[in-house]
Length: 267
Image 1: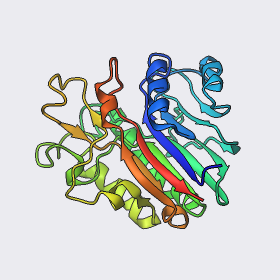
Image 2: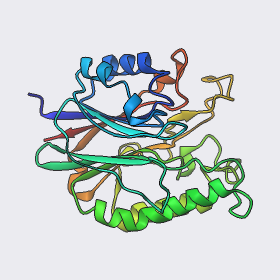
Image 3: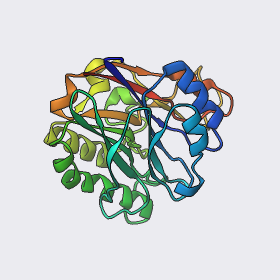
Image 4: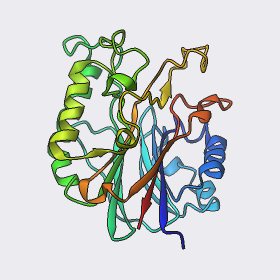
């Protein structure tokens, strides 16, 4: 048995529409556990038979269709599945489960609201909900960080200047406004979460995980953002190694606008 657990987080932007791309990703990365966001299916419609055939026999689902839904698919047993409602936003945005890897470790798949288009809480209900969700992470995370844990997923926030193609031009664009970035960094820093991607690829190195469908010249212009994250609790962070971003997945036919992010956990 391997001494390394390979974890992938990916906003797949519809599991049914991209079931073949899921297969391409697993052949490329050979993950043991996959954390998905924006599955866009109810739990009863999730393609479990296909996942079982690919070796992912253990699952934790929280789906309702639309632009929501999260999942954990695993080749190793999952225990103590939980679904949390964060910030009072009940939209199938969280699921977690425990794996036994050098001791129990809880894996969270998290999908923060996108926030719509206008960064004004008075005129944009979606943006107000997004800020409420991130504020809710403060209380929620106090408990989560106390375990050996990974929180990963589409946070829909690019917190640092080199997480976006232009810090100056995007300060008023949702995902990089100070109202979002300051809140998210407060959650991370105040609780002690380790952003393992930035630990291993520190500023000012550019790291992107999302490229808009509106960017028709991708990858030439490379106008990306780092919206997908992997945080580790202090008790687990030293065991997290080999961070990678599967950038090539953005160029696959009928790709998601997000790409998989990989971390490997040593026993």
